[in-house]
Length: 491
Ligand SMILES: *[C@@H]1O[C@H](CO)[C@@H](O)[C@H](O)[C@H]1NC(C)=O
Ligand SMILES: *[C@@H]1O[C@H](CO)[C@@H](O)[C@H](O)[C@H]1NC(C)=O
Image 1 (spheres, rainbow, N blue to C red):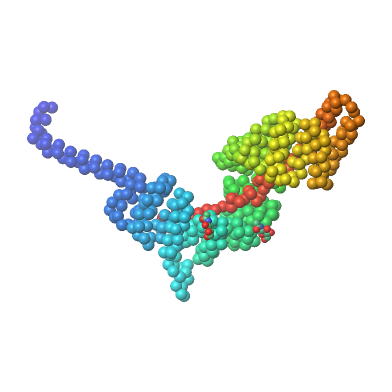
Image 2: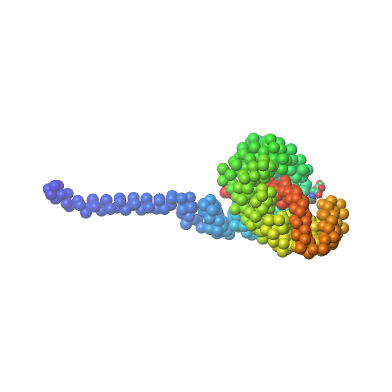
């Protein structure tokens, strides 16, 4: 070994130098390559070092950042692009879209206008559409979408959608968005025509069928609406809004045979991770309709866990507990309801009821009825129930006077007349007696009876859960239901 080494010893420095050279150049290449090719982002950054004035490269860096949801960083690059090349339409669209993602809508609109102003002007004798790049057409959609956030500018948005459609007759997304605006403008007939026209270009688009369902819903045609929601689901079995709204509709139509399907659709939404209070609430409503009260209770509670100020869920849960002989358990939910919705009359009636009959706290009951009368001085039920509070306190005379006023307010309400008769006959009997001891006993027993009957009456009146203003009626449920997709990327 020593021999060999000795032999080559005079080559050693040369070989060594060669090896070092190879190693170093290789590793430099690898390092730069790793650095450059590690991600799209670095590729483009590398490009930028070469050409600082190229908007395309800034835009590409922006897109790479945007794809990682780094909107603030992306915005910087899109803005740089728009400054480097102020006539780059795509750069302004990118700026607008990013501002939109950052919920800075005024800035977004400003950028989209810049992009739109850069589009070629129509020239006489030449069809406008011929001169606009297809991928720039979405300027109209983006601009219309951001403008339509302001409810007093819907007409302006509509004009932009119409313009987009005039340039591309098969621009499905423009039809869909325009229909949405027309629904908001309460021009449902036109919305229907717009969607039907869109179907001529694309008869297998589930969104269009879904939106037609929404139109029928707006027109109060529940059965037809359901047909279209179902059609959307045939084409796209996991179409979320169709799943949700068809389930709500089935619940509201009240057809027991369809309920199972509705239940399954909502369960599917849950499996898809669409955990939201409306899914739970509607599962609760369906369970209630099927008399599965324990399940209903669980669903309503879940809805409230997601949204603690959920009006209808809180009220229906309280009502359900009260109806299933657990009135004291209803109290905390009623208090929660009234904490967020102090004007919930039915909640106040139910709570007052429980205070009288189960908690035996007449002052608290009185407060409930007085709160209602502050808001609605002629609320017959509150007036009547306040009379019951007087009676319960043993103030029969005051109770009678009170009921007379209630009867004047609502001459046709038989229960008031009936209670007035009961009080009057008690008063007559009392006048016939002399012993105060007996008087006391009798008055409290008679009062109890009266309260019991009154109570029956409140219950039946409170039991209007399906008509509860804020339970999800078709109108409420579809305010945000039609699909509203923005053209998202402009590369
Ligand atoms: C909505 O648009 C109207 C009319 O253009 C305007 O006066 C109003 O300030 C806008 N509202 C908002 C919140 O931007
Ligand atoms: C919508 O239009 C219908 C008739 O076209 C009308 O009856 C209804 O009151 C309108 N609703 C609103 C909110 O303007």
